[in-house]
Length: 209
Image (cartoon, rainbow, N blue to C red; front, side):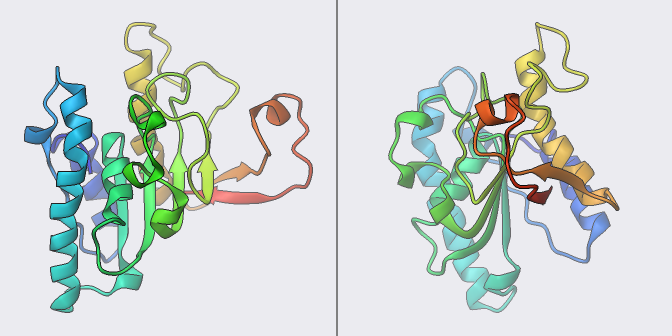
């Protein structure tokens, strides 16, 4: 889910369909989150989530899909749309992936109003712009921070477009992880300070994406 049917939705949808035998429903809610009024966009998240929940409940009701096969992916604001789905669907979601969930306004809201690990049986999150647009603190069962020691993601060196580039990199990395035969491996660490001090303790690894 994103705010328009271009980047990241269109090509990410194509990659998902190409890589697996699955059905993909892509949600474009641009009319409800127009630029220039971010507060209204945040307010409309619950409307988007409740409408999407009705669609999901109907698809489950007619056996178009089964709950264990449902995977909701949301980028930026869409990550919180995915999170708020848990407030409206009749069954608990199986899997939510949050791609650089937005921080502005959401950091001060109750957890029911934003993506949280209680929103699905498994919630994984990719943080690519944790110091500006995205959320810094972990919110899922597994939170991945690609290139955490860098101020910008690879290819996002320009100070003019750096934040937006970092933010959009989450969906690009997710798409690459879907196509990768070896996967993107991350090492578990208690926090950023521990990571900087190279004091992550036990060697526990997980695959991103």
